[in-house]
Amino acid sequence: MPAPMESPGVALVTGGSSGIGLAIAQALLEDGFRVVVTGRDAGRLDTAVRSLTMEDDGYDVTGHVCDVRDPAAVRALVDLCLKEHGEPRVLVNNAGRGGGGVTAAIPDELWLDVIATNLNGVFWVTREVLRASEALRKPTGRIVNIASTGGKQGVPYGAPYSAAKAGVIGFTKALAKELAATGGPTVNAVCPGYVETPMAQEIRASYARLKDVDEDAVLAEFEAKIPLGRYCTPREVAGMVRYLVGPAAASVTAQALNVCGGLGSY
Image 1 (spheres, rainbow, N blue to C red):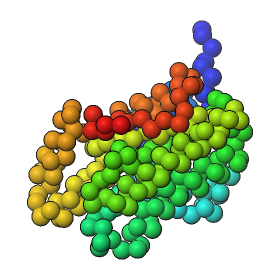
Image 2 (image 1 turned 180 degrees about the vertical axis):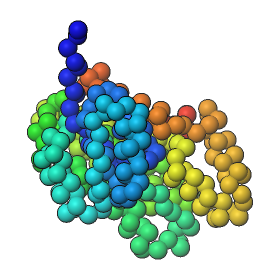
Image 3 (image 1 turned 135 degrees about the horizontal axis):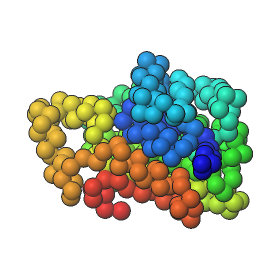
Image 4 (image 1 turned 45 degrees about the vertical axis):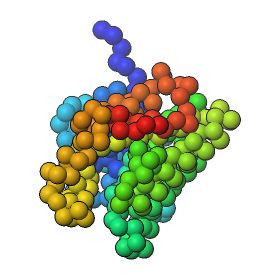
């Protein structure tokens, strides 16, 4: 009998309890990674982990509650990950939230929370894993940050979200060049466009309220912007992550790659 395939290592995926993060976790499990997923809601996280193990009871997946807005919680998470699962070789920063509205009416609390979740959280987690994990610091290490086409071209009524995701793209490129100079890991961003997730449903509802139309009208308006005429799926976004963490992408770094059905023009 052939020898069992050796695991490619530990992958830490933040925001893995639904949508894109859950699809990424499943794709990496299929590739043999030992996957650690995080989320803020213990119940949703437990449901996500159980759904992944139902796909294949041989999957090695664990969930840990963590609020990426809190640097102390991030440090505790990374310490726990190393102690119980080993050093992550792959880090996928996916935790995020939507948020926006008419810019002149956006409250301070909303702006600060979107930035804290979508941008500061990427920095807190990346910094702690880089400090703690020699496996991540090697040339075979991989950091993938989930940004957005909105971070490249802006989203009307989405100023906090667009600003945070633009920051993620800038952080990605800066860190990639810094680490490349010392023979470190690759660092890339994946930029989804419209993706059918629970957050997408919330966004359509928000736009419907802003424009005083029904959600079907918002969906039709959004789909009309997409050359392929449809939303992407979480699985399609996960496919790009899967490529970037694999050996075929060893020379791909400092990139912000779209998965958007042609929505993004650069």
